[in-house]
Image (cartoon, rainbow, N blue to C red; front, side, top):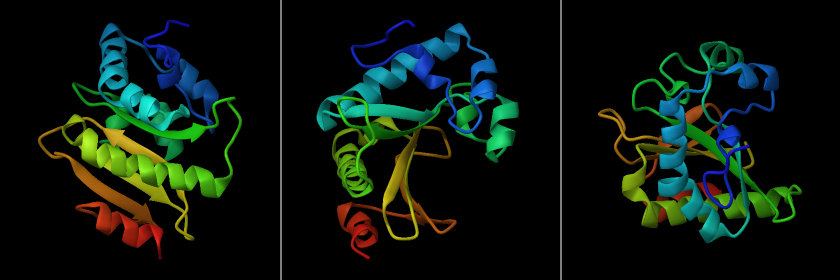
Length: 175
């Protein structure tokens, strides 16, 4: 494995818990590795340093086959076409074990707020995915495009809700 930084390697971007074989078969180009570097240095490493927990990529680049199997939209930025990129992530404790759901959720909400304040111009779209009981599951973050310019959303019960600031976000957390 080739390390990009003290906490990330390139291979971490080619993963899928549901379809590991399809993730492994996803092509890797020089442009993909350059995107990995960009994502780590501009987005993920600053988040990891702030949270002081092990950040785990749940989904990075997807092949068409993997994207179809997962049920991703055809235009998903997870396909990494052109300048596009997207990653979904969560956390584990510093020893690599899973965190309690409530602790994980609280950390994701806090991280989302921190990204809003500190990395606002580093992403095109940021979505926090919630369970029906308002526990955060993971954060999706993707590149800036003509269509996506620092959009912030919550996904819950199949719907997307636009948010503008911490107050909007806290309304979802405290429901």
